[in-house]
Length: 343
Image (tube, rainbow, N blue to C red; front, side, top):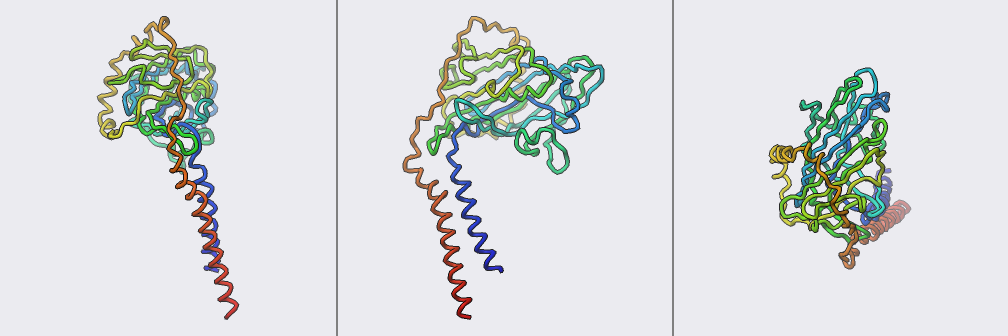
């Protein structure tokens, strides 16, 4: 019986290897540095759905070669006459469908800090062993969330502020076994639809940092939605929006840096948060972009043909090796049967 189990295991390994490795060339924009709107998390809090509205939001992004610093300010209005205590969360990584790139796969976010009405709150990573999650079917696994507690006063505005860093230098735009390696940033706006009503007013503001200029951006999605001053700033305004996947922001920019130390940037998070605070959210809200030009960068094509010779290796991994494992298992089985008959 032990020998039979070994043979069966070899066959299963071969089968699963072929299935998983055959998907290695799945098209999409992978390992994109990304953030999202926070959403209600625990199942027990689902009774409050429809009671708290994300009335307005301002997302400010300092986009650097290799990484991005993000600050979000959200005015949350409790539509009821009672205080609501709720656990909300941020997905650590996830994916969403996109017409221009097939799919976008978001990487982790780092050094997350959250303030509720100006006071810093404790942020922790959710554990699937101890909680009953409301959104676990929507965005991967429960463990892929940062969560915190917030209290929403009756018929009042609660201000939520979040800060985090993302690594944009690992992104790759892929189709089959061809891939281009650029920086990639994304913001999942559609998660805001989990709250009551539409988002009355919002602005996404992007400040290009260091050597980056508007011409450094190859593609920005949604197409023809952002406006730019033609130098270092981009703005996306919206009103009365019920966001969906077509509103999610994706930016492809600059080439991948060969020598980049993101861990060093993480250690400087506090400095970067002070820097993004200095942008002054009130001034950003009042910034008049009505005369700016529409950002036309829309290039999400793949130009590298590095899948030519290199495609042989993943194909060998995906098909030949599993076949050899199965053949080996069959040979061993035949030899075992012959020895058994001789006895």
